[in-house]
Length: 553
Image (cartoon, rainbow, N blue to C red; front, side, top):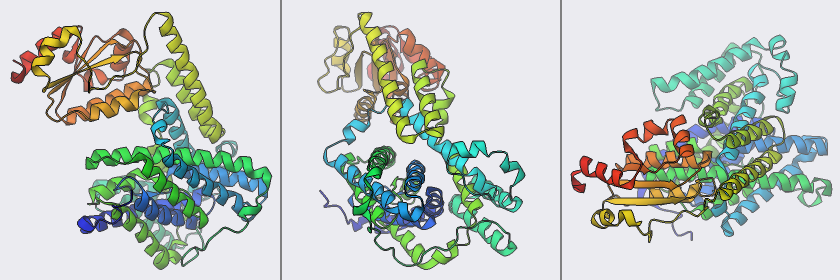
């Protein structure tokens, strides 16, 4: 299983990719550590351990792993809840570490029992609402540090004390935070050779140091290698078991989703195929070991993975170099990080929070099916201002109930709900036989049956991505598709965009009213699929191919 751990065939590219990914990860690790409530050092420990071990044991060759926004928000909620139970951070550490450790163990278990095959069934509105809520939490909780004030424990507390932002703010902190945000957005327009978060961190911190401004800073960071933090784990009070189990499960599920989404992005960039179960095992090992040293849990980091690949990383050595670079920083420059103002870290985190917000899903709220919009908004609000744990559960229950209602309505109308058939062995319908037999090497015809909803979307996308490069055109028949939800809609859009990149012409036939209206409302038609490639009958699509491609004459 782990024969490819050390592949030195691309050593120079992996070294460059890993170092650049490490440079990108450094300011984020510090910022996420502070936001978690455990301090900047916990972010560094997590980035180092998860970065090295997830790369070594994971199933995505170019994955750069470490603390991420969603994982940090859940970790911060756990820290706050544990302190409420134990009375202080020191007393709560055994609860926190045990929850982090159990979360990693659960991820390993997920990989061993193939739970990755079921994670794809999470509906888009639930994931979108949760991620957008996480993004808003990051933004809201950084408002006070941005203004030089003590960070509030929850978004509700921030909202209650919002007037103090305008009466008690530290103007020097505001200037530093504003400078950080400005550099974050403007510097990439000058050059992308150096990550803008790092430039912002250095410039604003140096300015604050030499101007001797009185602003809150990170403070002393322990130097040297971390020590094991296992004392007291076996004596945790039984009253905390429920809290530990709940947060461990959420961390495991969220970390798995976060990592696998990044793995898909890496696959698309490198034209490879990751091993989902092995990826979860690697992430679980990383998070479990990081917990033992007091590090916050992490997941596959999209930004770090992308810059790793773009900088030449191609094997798992690149992810390991990314973690080792952060270890070198900890050992050599840890004392300098103590002078970084918290307003600067807030200035880095606020843009990241906005990036996590799913603007695509929010923009289409009035266009997608009402049930999907309701689920997304409920999960978003519950995530932002309520319980992270309950938000996902409520979202899944709502999505399932609403879909069952829709499926029941369709059943009452006499419409059959079937599964998506694969391309292999899918027999042509009678009205396709003559054309298909003549051009089956150049054209594929896909039949869809029943509603295209969140339960089918991952399988659908996987099938379309495996189309042979020799295929010139794909015809998708929608005659038997009465309904499409938001998950199905975006899965379809992503698949069509991928096929466009491959030069495959996509034709739709027999679109019913609801799918047609929905695709038109968010501009899949005509931006992705032009109106001239929509047909009422299969014969009309054949005629169009004959008239536009010499190979079909």
